[in-house]
Length: 403
Image 1 (cartoon, rainbow, N blue to C red):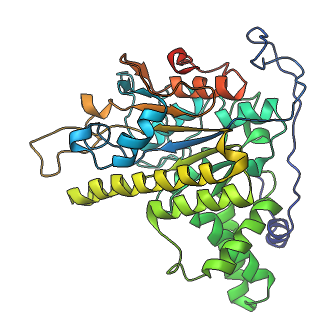
Image 2 (cartoon, one colour; image 1 turned 60 degrees about the horizontal axis):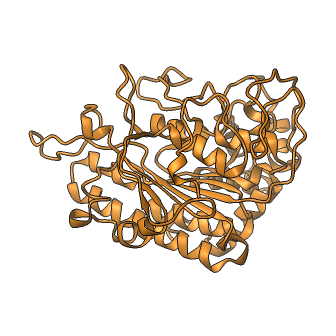
């Protein structure tokens, strides 16, 4: 990464351009044109996007079917009794059993976004790091490559404890990449915005100022492929409203997955996103050794799902033009030999067993598809609904769901 002069960096962080460079690199043709799917062509005439909007709920932190979709033992009653009957449900979705394919959060999230199973290594070489870069495009990139959707309307809503997943906004594919990236709402991004604002307001002087500038540069430099540091004016306005409402202490705004629900609903009102991934993750606190962290995490996600669905139904522009997709990042093991039997690092069968649900325009209501399907089928199915084909994905369109 090119070394930035500190003053130039700060100036760039605080005075951003709203424009996103939409590179028109020559693309070699893949696939054939159809009436309803935008193909990859040497030159693409980008169209206005009319919908549907898509909200992907990563029912995350890893969940077993037993505590989620099995009615007798569920901790997510809204999902089971209210949402599943409204859409097409795939109770036998799986993560493929492939040698060295991890069943964890980052990998599962990229399976969903790219439609391709991959083996990933942290780009910084950290042993347990999860800063991954996909080799094929994400659904965000496909959407923005073919349609005139601005960056701030393609969002990852991310948790405060898994900062690596802030950066699954683009692939390193030479035909797509950062020109068509999505953006992020998270506490980490708010803290970055807040520090930049405090520096601009002149709160620091001398050595303290230099220290704060270096801190800001380090925080923003994590997004190492960004040509312009910081976030767009639209998202800066979002953070100004957040600060006005919740202040800066962090003791007033929601935390954990409740924070993600609040960010999602506020984004719908203020940014009007077209494609959103909500990275729920509270279930993973079970690694602390308390089983109730896992089951309570499922309940909190279910409450969030209920609130997001209600927000969609109460908004005239979203109500009949929004697809909700619910899919876990991974399953969890079933191991009665350990005190907390549901981890997910052993790669057992149930760690590969997940589910998928599609609700909204273009999808059949009240249908259960009783066959094994793959997690990587989610991206291709979303692409079909939104009007593009994920040319570099290995998954298939889940045709039984298409109404």
